Length: 102
Image 1 (cartoon, rainbow, N blue to C red):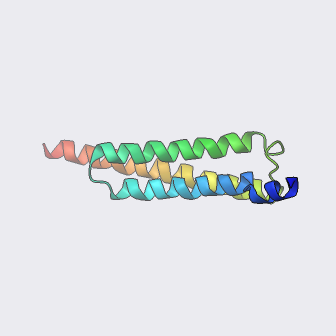
Image 2: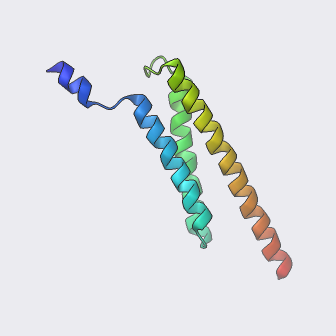
């Protein structure tokens, strides 16, 4: 019975990999939003997903993460961070251009 429960439970790595996919989805949504409030919500949700990944990476052995899984999550975390920096820089540039038009 215990084996069945353990087999049915998804791994922590799978959860964190889904968080990485979710973060990138929120980033893609933010790029498409024309309303600033929706943009902000998507960016905040991407940050929350990234924070969950970073918490998981803080103590990988306690989470049962292998070396390959840690490497994968660290790479994805870096990609998410870079995408968030680029996204917020693009938004700041757009806001600046809009202000100069006024």
